[in-house]
Length: 104
Image (cartoon, rainbow, N blue to C red):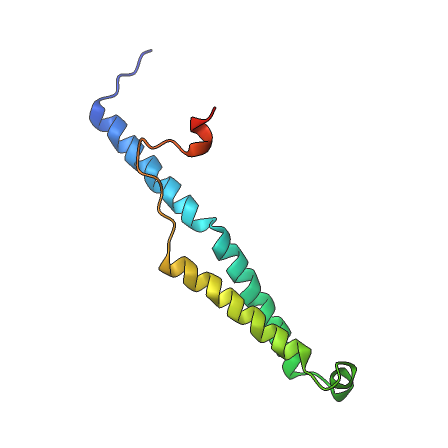
């Protein structure tokens, strides 16, 4: 049972796989994961900073450490997400072999 594929079928399959590869690269970009986690934890820690008691502030010598740490985490997370938006991952052009595979 030999199936024959035309050049058009092969090209369509290759184009489909390249599209799926580009989608997976964008979805699993480490900047998205790090940025998302920092934003989520930053929101949680910032809320903890807004609800800090006087006893918590006395422990930190008057500095609302949760508030400042949460805001810093938010800024870092937003930086990673902005970086992702401004410099998206571009998949390598077809036929280009990554450097790791060239050395083998």
